[in-house]
Amino acid sequence: MFYSPNQKILAKGNLVNKESVKIVKLSGSNYEIGYQHGYLLADKIKLMITQTLPAAASVVSMTLQSSYEEAYKKMVKGAKIAEKNTPLELLEEMQGITDGANAAGYDVTFDEIKLWNTMYDQWCIYAHPHYWNIDDESVKGQYPPDGPGTTVLTGSGCSSFSAWGDSVGGNGDMIFCKNEDNLDLPYQLENRYLYIVNPDIGNAHLYMCFPGMIGMDGGFNEKGISMMTQYNASIYETMDGCGIGIFTRLLLTHANNLDEAVQTFYNHPRCTGIAYHCADAHAKKAAVVETSAKMVVVRHPMQNNTRLWQANDSICYPGYQDYEGYNMVYDQQLVYQLNDVSSIEKYLNSQKDPYNFVVPAPCRFERYDILLHENYGNIDVDTAIKIMSDRYDPYTKQTRPKMATSYTNNILATISANYPKELFTDNPNGEFKAGVANLWSLVSYPASGDFWLAIDDFPANQGTFHHFNFFELLKSEEL
Image (cartoon, rainbow, N blue to C red):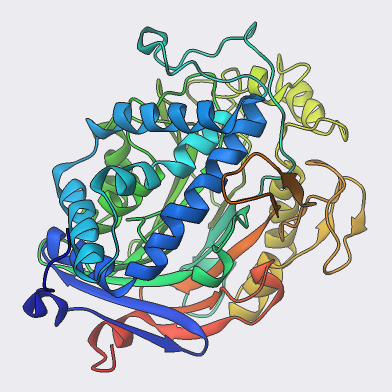
C-alpha cells in the first residue's frame, strides 16, 4: 500500500552524480536515514529485490546442487534466524527503507529488505565445499566434514592494507586501502553507490554498497576509524549472529578509537568467518580482528612495523607474524582443504597448491608483503593505487594481462581480482553469467577525509580513481 512521501524527512537527504560516481547523502534518525535511502533509490531497490536477489539464490542453488526453490527457502530461513541478532537501530533503518520505497510507488516488503541484507553472509556460508544445515538450529554452525558436497565457484579476492609513520614518509599520516571483490550479479555493476551518512546519534561516515542494503564492506568515519571486511572461512559459522553489513554500520557509527572498534566484535554474536581490518588514523594504530561464530582474536602489526595487510586466508597462527593466541588456521583447514597445518612452514606450503580450487589466493598476502617492503618510506596515493591494482602472482612469478582472468583460485589470482564467469541456469528471470572481480577500490587518508575511489569498471581498480574529500561532501549544499 503506497502513501504520500514525507517531504520533511526527504529534505535531509539527496542523490547526485559527481565524476560519474553515484553518491547518496543521508541524515537524521535511523528511520529517517532508511526512509531517504528507500525513496531516493526505490526503483533500484526494486531491481535488487526482483532481479539480483533471485540471482543470489541461483548462486546458492548451484553451490548446493539443489533447486532454485529449495535454495531460496534456505535463504529465507537463514534471514529469519539472523533477524533476532539485528540491533534495533538497524531494523528501524530497514523499516525506513521499506517505507521510503513504498512512498515512491514501489512495492517492497520489510521481509524482502531483511532478506536482501543477509545475502552476502549467506553466500559466505554456502561458498564452501560442504554446507551448514541451517534447517537444524541445534547444529549451531558446526562444520559437517561428512556432509553433502557442493559446487565450488571460482573466485575470492577482498584484501586491504594500512600504513603510517616511517612506512609512508612525509608527516606519517595513515593511509588505508581496500579492494572489494565479488560477483557481478544482474544489475549490480550499474548500481554501485557511495553512501555519506550523518546520523543524529553517532559518527558521520561513508561506505560503498548496493541499493537497499544498509552496509557491506566497511568504510571510514569522521573520527578517522576505518574498517574492511575479508571473507575468512571457518568451521564455526551460522546465521545465528551478525553479518558484515551489521558490523560495518555498528562500527562506523559508534567507534571513536581502535579499542572501541575491536570491542564491537566481542559485543555481538557473529555469523560467518570474516577478518575485519580496523585502523585508527589519528592514533596511527591498526589491527586485524579474525572472527567466527565461536572465536574473536586480534592480530596487531609485527613489532616495529608500521603497516598491516590482510587477504582471505587466516594469519592467526601462533608464532607467525608475531601473533600469539588461539590458532584460527586449525578452524580453517577443513574448509580450505589444506593438506597439513601442523607447523607454520607446512601451513604456508599447503596454501601454495596451485590446483586447490577452494583456497582463496593466499599469494595476495605474500604480494602485499613484498610491495609494502619494496615501497617502504614512499607509500603515497600513487603507490597505493598501483598496489591495489597489481596483477603479479608471486607463486607463478607471472603478471596477469590487464583484462585476462585467473586460471584457478590459486593461479594468477592476484591483488586485482578477475576470475572466469560462470553460467547460472536455474533462475526465474532467465539464465545469466557472473564472475568475481573488483567491484570497488578505495585509497583513503581517513584523518583528512581525502579518498580516491574506483567504482566504474569491472575490475574497478583497473579504471579511474576519483578524488573526493569526505568532510567536503558532508557539508556540501549540492548534496
